[in-house]
Amino acid sequence: MSANRAGGDRRLEILDLASQMFARSGFHGTSMDDLGAAVGLSGPALYRYFSGKEAILSEMLIDISERLLEGGRERVAANVDPRARLDALVDFHVDFALDDPDLIDVQAREMDAMAEDDRRVVRRLQAQYVSLWVDTMRELWPGLTAESARSAAHAAFGLINSTPHSNRLTRPEMATLLQGMALGALAAAAQEES
Image (cartoon, rainbow, N blue to C red; front, side):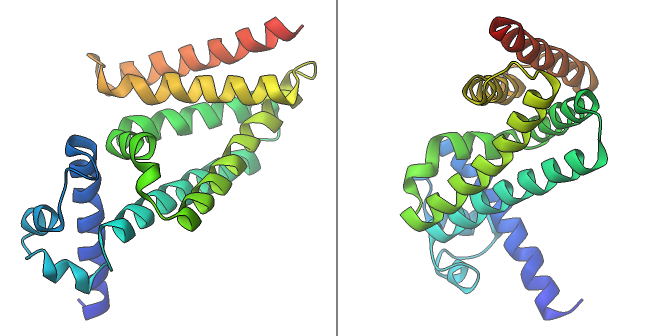
């Protein structure tokens, strides 16, 4: 294994453990020493990988925002039919919520700890992701206004993103439940507009 690959793996390990620790104890409740101990390094040794705790948070949240946008774009490109596209977007977001609940928590609670420039990057990426949903819903339900579609998308995200922490079902059962609830909520929003 090359030194660059090993360093990259260590960075990913740090980001993964940081997301767990930030979700559990909060950004301000987690020190560099805590993070270092979790990955088997001294706090100061972490500075070989990141310039500080804020840099860890920024990389974590920008990365997940980029991955969501990229995954959303892939689903849109793969599905010409708007109904199939919406199903694919919901399935994708449900998988994200079930696979990465710590990142959801960190993104919801810790954005204010990021540098303003990095927060703007995340907000821009999030807006582009939401637009994929809005455009798809408006194509599927032409009477739906952009504002109603945006509000419905955010409501569906809230539903999907909050449930993985309280689920008592198997992953496949939970995925099916979340998919049905999210699609039902979106369809209800469209009916309200008509």
